[in-house]
Image (cartoon, rainbow, N blue to C red; front, side, top):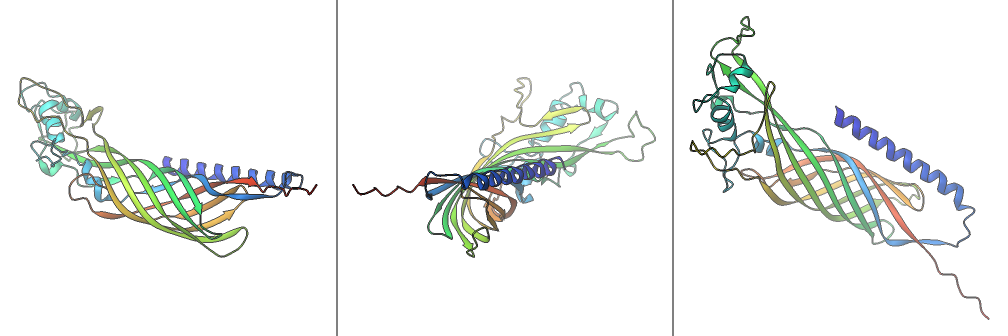
Length: 317
């Protein structure tokens, strides 16, 4: 909900900003005696909106992790098993910090493969970008967009105690549920063609289509067991015990396609506002078995139109 509120505040700010620009331009245009102006060959702008990622690749953050070759770990070699059982738990005979958080005696709990997360999903995120538009004629243009987003992934997992917790003996279940979260970075490179439908001076519909390349980075993976926060990506080199080597952060690049449909508003000669819905088929090339999947975004673009004065004709001597 906080992310939606931030997006709404940003969109309202842009609308007020553009309205103020339009008002000031209208008041000053009549007194401008610098001569007629014309649009330049390109426009630049920025984008802000909401990005809704497909949950297919969210399973990359399900606590298994990947070895240095990029292969998904088995359960016994998984990041979660190594951290919960062997590092913080009773797996190697050390003090059991997990039992303290669960409120049970030392070693009186189990973590099996059936407790691993199965419901990983992305949280709607804010996307921002930088845009370039190169007009071909009055209604057509080539577009080049660079958009970035930082996504959060949420899910939960369970741990089963062998008897009711000491702190709450009246509890009727031995299964406790905890949160697992991930962080992912995405950068979109879009190149396409935009077409305006209609010839109204102010308001028209438009559509666009093109290719998109998506650079994705697996950034963070963390589990929370009550007050205990465990970074799954942190590798502890324990010389006393054999342990899997450090994991590798997944980074990948995939090529897909995007489209867009929206409303184009010419606020004044210098500023253009676009409200658009933009679906895309992106290949998030991390994890195992990456595939082209539908992603969705909705947002605002604001273009600045560079203007240049037409040269005044020379007066004959």
